[in-house]
Image 1 (cartoon, rainbow, N blue to C red):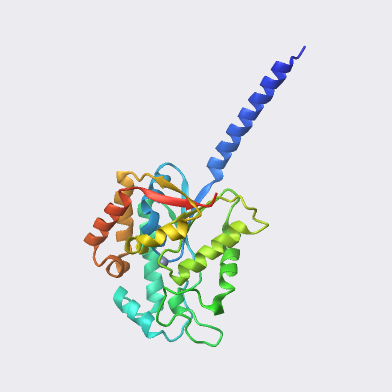
Image 2 (tube, protein in one colour):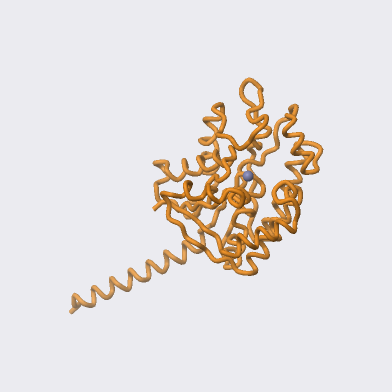
Length: 277
Ligand SMILES: [Zn+2]
């Protein structure tokens, strides 16, 4: 005779087995996807965390959305100035060399780099052919690009798998591309057919958060924060990964030594991540 206890015990065992199998399968298929607006943002902001997750055997990918080759067109003086600062002669060379830097940085922190085809805002023009960001990039997205986040959402949706965990920038600093990318990721997570349960974590945009730490509190007021430790190997890989973006160092930190000092100071305390409950 089968007692109520043994049936209950059997059900308990089945439940344990199911949960264990589910956890194991999620571990196999789950990927940690860092959404990066430009070719440096994810490694700059959370390179140490990426390193530690990859070291622990996780599949980690960095998806850079705004790094496409722009169509042949006259460059704005602002874009030409940036190319000069970075040591490049053309938009084609800039994107090609910066993608190569990103491949090196991603391999230093143990992630796979994935590059998408939307050009940087310094190259984008409106339907009338006028540059949308001729002088300033730390501005709200141009109204002519109102449909761009939805296009980005569709591009992301095509590549995402059900168990992927997403990380996206808060948009500290107010760079138009960072704000557009955040909108795109939120569109994905909040859309009806995607469901509301896809995990989404936010990271603080380095170096902007270093220069404007006061921007963090108002940006994260309604969120819950979690601090993640970064190992000493993770911190070293973080600094080495950022150093791989050779063309960007002078613009972002003046020189490699200042970068190392700033990152050891910031990263030594671990990394904060935020999410909406
Ligand atoms: Zn950026």
